[in-house]
Length: 234
Image (cartoon, rainbow, N blue to C red; front, side):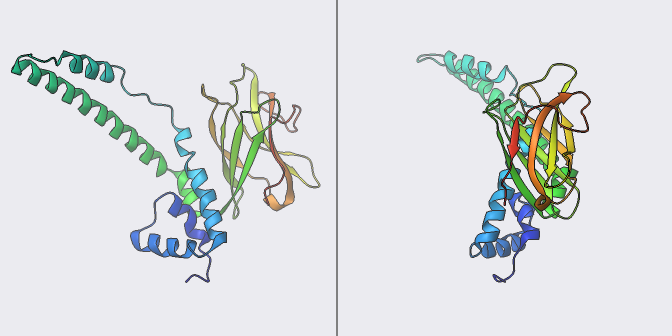
């Protein structure tokens, strides 16, 4: 078993979607295979970006103030019924917080079962990390490109929102051909985006991946400077 790589199962393991028996089998192999262990680490890094695809969901604003108010009402010498009423209100507020958290976890689980993640779990892929340039030093991105097809995903953070009429564009730059557009996107208020991309060719045929700022709706060749780039992922 340990002499045979388990590449096909690593993304599913990272997403927690393997059955118990399969989980143990794959983990046993990874424990003795440095190559698969590295691939698993890459898949887990991508899986950690999945919550970026969700709109941030803060807890209901009245929960913690209600808990604090009721907690302050509990004073030495207070009547028993007052303590009981206070604790009842606190319990209700805590129950509301728990219900909100469960709802958020269900939303994450719903997204994790969607078509994007199914592709990640079922298709071997390559991970490329893009780093911000001097113009955007806090930006970073990860491209997850399926090796058996022409699709993939981009998870990106740290970019400022653009004014109307401007977009970000991801480019694959071949070794012997002009750059090819892979995706056009904007970022949310937190500077993040999760984008389905078109992979124009094998990664081994590329010399760079870059992100530029372009005029909307995007162009056929990059005109702006590279804000993020990757030039060595082998």
